[in-house]
Image (cartoon, rainbow, N blue to C red; front, side, top):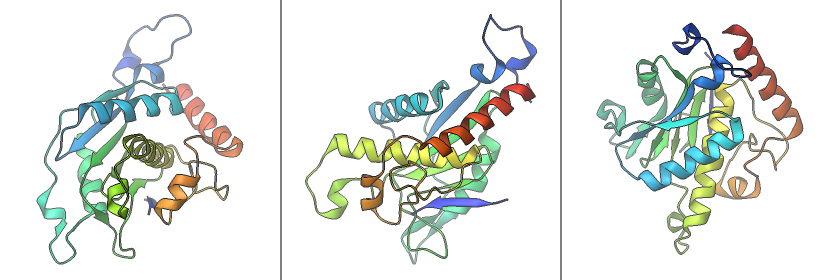
Length: 207
C-alpha cells in the first residue's frame, strides 16, 4: 500500500432515479477525532462537496487512539491512526476523512499536515499547524478554513489515486511548509482534474 502524506455498495442494490448513479448516492464522511467543531466541519464538508461533486456527511466525534501517541515527541503517529480508520469505513462511505487538532508525524519527517493511503478509502488531516496563531500571527478564521479545506481536498485526492503535482497552484502540490499551502489553490489543475474524473467514472462503472 502506497502512503502519501502532506507535510460492496449498499445503495447499488436499489433502483436509482434517472441520471443518478450508485456512486453519487455514496458519501465522503468526515470523522472528527477528539474534538467537536460543527461549524468548521460543515465548511470543510462544503469545500469537499464542491471539489469532488459528491455528497459529504459528518460523523460523531470519537477519541484519538492513545496508543498512537508518542510521548517523547508530543505528537501522534499518523500511520497508526490511518490504519485504525479502516474499520470505521461504513458500507455507504465512499471515502473517510478524519480531522484532528492533534499534531501528526511520520518517522521520516518532523510533522505532516495529513496522510492518505493512495487508492485507499481513508485519510487524515491535522489542524494543529494550520492556524495563523501557530506562526505567531493574529487569528484569521477565513485563512484557517481555507487551509483546512485545501489539506482535506489534497488528502482525499490521494485516495482517488492522485499523486503529488508539480504545479504549485494545484491543490495536489506537496506542501513542505504552510507557505506552500497558502500559495496553492483549492482546485485541481487540468491534468489532476482529468485523472480524478477518470477515477470517478471508473467507480461509477464498477457499481
